[in-house]
Image (cartoon, rainbow, N blue to C red; front, side, top):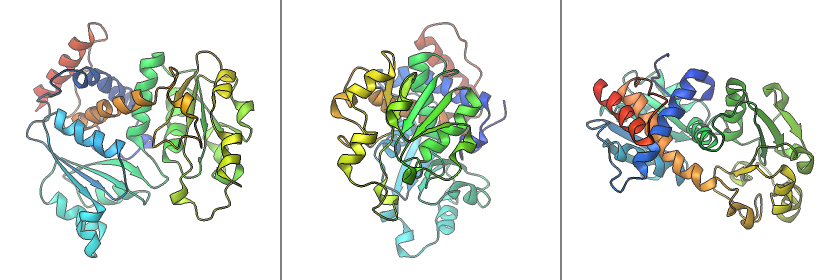
Length: 332
């Protein structure tokens, strides 16, 4: 397998690398469920989380991931960084890299931020924690781990994604992953919330939510990103949007008895998803949150410790987890 130095996006990973990170994340789930949630895998390593956009799940899970693997973790937000004093992004990146961290995790509103900085920070691994409407690779790896737990393999499955596709980095990354892993994407949105030429990704496009539901294995809801809208004319009203594109119990029944529900968060209850659906047994939303920590542990371990040996497919979950950690320790 090709070594992974940076994680810019799903577009840069091949199928083998994606499956490696998902499987390694799977082995870390057990650590997060122990009473003592600690492993020595990244002891002596330094992780800096640099977030220029608000985040609860992604930022917290990266922090927990680093700390649970015994790394030293520093968190910096835009409001406390020198960019508030006029420092450029490049100067901020070079300043932090001069402190010799092993990994710099960045969330930024501009697409391609990590790729830009990588040319100037040759000794630091960079992780894209979400860049504008471009990509969000660790969220998609998280979703793939959730689907692995639910299905075993997403190949041949149908995921119906509904909402603000135009501004969604999650949607773009899923469309890229679907091509690599062999699952199908149905995209549902009003025309005002669709990017141009969306069909080039090989997905089916619907404007009628009810028409897209039959045969769906998962319904993946997205919020409307009002902070990225340039005007208020994307849809007539919240009430009408919910009636046309909100997931309720009736719609979920139409998708089939085994269909699961996903959402990357944060949720707007009563807009894109009804409360009874979000809290139902079919909802895997909290599993996505849990798996987000495990996947970010896997990403940090892969970048800091090199490529772990392929863990055996047999044995208990505890044995698989210990085996993955031992492979990482051997390389440190």
